[in-house]
Amino acid sequence: MSEMEIPVFPLSLVLYPGMTLPLHIFEARYKQLIADVHGVGGVFGIVLVEPDADDAEGARLHTVGALARITQLEPLPDGRYNLVVQGERRMRLLDWQEEHVYATAHVQLLDEDLGSDILAGLVRARFGEYNDILFTLVQMAAPTLPDGATAVELSYWVASNMHLEWAEKQFLLRCESTDERLSSLLQLLAREIQKVSMFSEQALQQGKQFIGGVPFSVN
Image 1: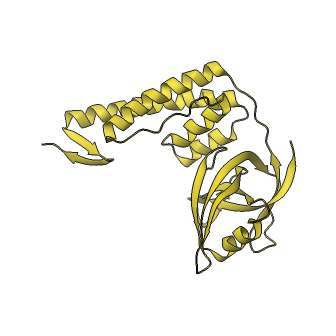
Image 2: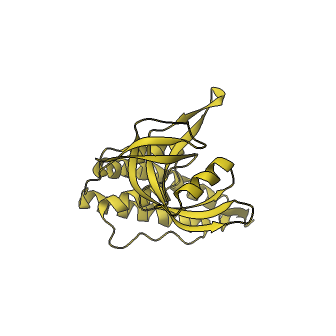
């Protein structure tokens, strides 16, 4: 495991390795961050930050996040940026510094293991079942599972495309192994399939349809 010092961007979301994320940068400190990393690799860290329900001024900063690399950058006339980043390796924060305009951290890059092809196949099949029910209900095109994805790539893709609470998405990012993530996904998929199946049955009984995700009644 290697270590490095990088700028860090806390966000109320989870970025997985291999996944892309569009961002609109408007705060002065993060405009400076983008200006500083652009041209020198375009890499910074993204970690989940959650508001503290018991403290209006507080927030919980998670310690496992992902490296983000800028793949598209559009500077705007007033200094703001539109950009797209791609998640790379997972990282663990070892310390946190706020001595600069934006925060930096000393991070440890986390290795990935190959994972089980058998577990990956089970997850692929169950996610297909989940997709069939959910996207038939909302009458929208379902995301297409990537062909030839490795077990680790599949684990992150499915985690990214499931409708889960941020805490659950963070748990999946934090899993110590690919097989732990795949096993956790199987449990979450079983729960979510049951939920969307019940909702679909109720909608059918009530004569409701969903066009583009928007419900309306056929009665």
